[in-house]
Image (cartoon, rainbow, N blue to C red):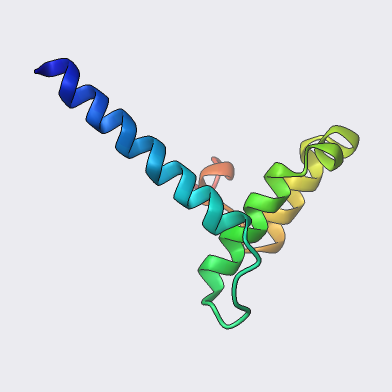
Length: 78
């Protein structure tokens, strides 16, 4: 039964990841809260591999900073 449980959790994880990906990659409503908008912006920036290949992580780090930062990235302040 252990393998059945594992398979059930694996399938649930797959379904949830696909739903998150669909939600984040959709354009959605502009009336959604700022957290959803920022999550979508961050996802699009992470998925833009052409831009990341050209600019490296600097573009992604600038995007994080412009959107309020990420305390974990600022270890000296954490």
